[in-house]
Image (tube, rainbow, N blue to C red; front, top):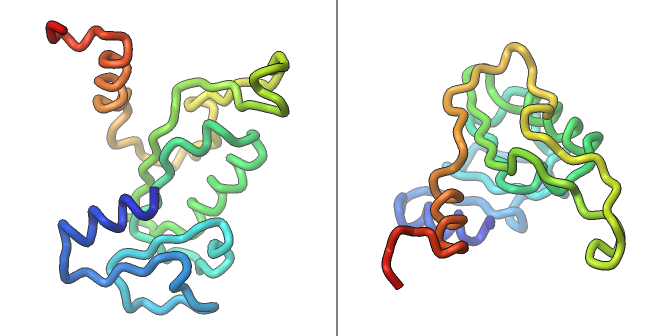
Length: 146
C-alpha cells in the first residue's frame, strides 16, 4: 500500500517531499510533506505530531489487544485538530492458524466495537462506495450487460 500511495502522491504533488520508511532516521525531522511509516518506525513519533493518520484494511486482521495498542498510538501522536481515516470491514473473523483447514473460533472484529474515544468526532461513517462497486462487480451485479 505504501508504494502505491507514494506513487500517487508524487504524481498529484510533484514538488512534495515524500519520506519512505527506509529513509527515516533515528529522529524525525519536519523536512517533508508526506511521511510514511511502518511498525518499525512508530517509536520515533512524538506526541501531537501527525496531521493525518490512516489505516486501511489491517485492523480487521488484528486481535483486539493489537487494535487497542494502535488506537492508543494514533490518539497520542495525532494533533488535537488532526484527522484519523480508517477503512476496515464492518465485521471480520481474524484468521488463526491453518485458516483453510481448521474451524476459526476467533471472536469477530467489529468496526463499531473498536476502542473509539467519546472525544472522537465522526465526520463520515459509511460503507466505502469503492468497496460496494468491487463487490457488485465480483458477483456480476454491476448493472452492465455482459
